[in-house]
Image (tube, rainbow, N blue to C red; front, side, top):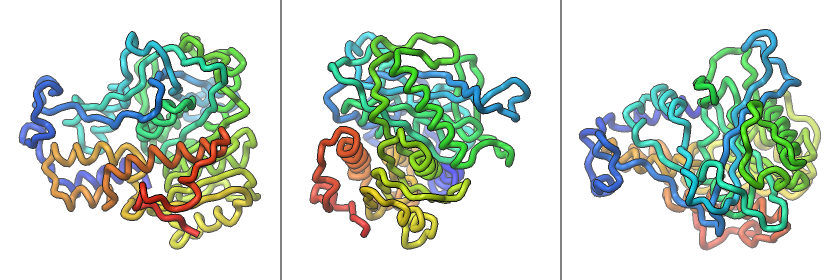
Length: 397
């Protein structure tokens, strides 16, 4: 199940209305219009935390893993982005949801190329200095889904950063849309030799943990030697690290947490748990599953993984959620639907019947509560029982 395939199906489900024909009050305000489109830029909901957010991109090279597809002398190469609480952000520009070249390639592949001028901006200010509070920042690493990109859960990532986490997102080479500093555009590669199994993703995450440790020690893992934001070296806490991921990235998160005790907690967003290499051993550290399509009742792999969880565990499901629901899709697709003139049913065919506003609030609240409890030891009643503030969320026994 790939994000590219699901978005292609979304295009087939929605009416292919040209942007020039799109109308509606949500897009009528000229102040936000992009030149030549008559439509406003897509937007993401703002994070709710007390801190402004900074971000920086890194090119990382894992010299312990030769890259046969790239040729002799080449090693596994990854683009990553670190998000963190920042200060003095007004002097720094905000980052786009995706780099422009990667965004165009992504949209062209799924048939939404006419939306390229409307790419959303994030809350992350590029290169802003790190907010120093006297304590090191707990660290989270994020793994995206198949044929997706590292920005596809920006709502969640910038939410966590605004509440005091450093979050490192990684673009898994050969299964991601990304852009390198030298201008190369990388797209998913349908090659059975490409290292794109969940175990390969998990190896990427573990390498990123190594890079986090270098930054925590005052070093710089960027392969090009680019300057890190002021205050970032020495600001990360390698003793408080966790991981989360969506779809194949959720499975990779489970693989990484099982394999690496540096990860103190893991969160899967509708991960299929179809592991390669196969699941072995038990996990005694906290793990949470936010389920939509891949339920333990219908998927033996998810049920098998659950049975290996010997520590704190929780499985929640939002009623009406589909596989695309735990991510930025819930914020972006209602806007795309208005642009393209989709009916309400066509939109529901894509993102499910869960109310988009509640879906955004769920993904802002539950991951934060989980990591706060298990990395910061701030107990959250939200994880104890269903909450009237989130009526769609059910706890699965």
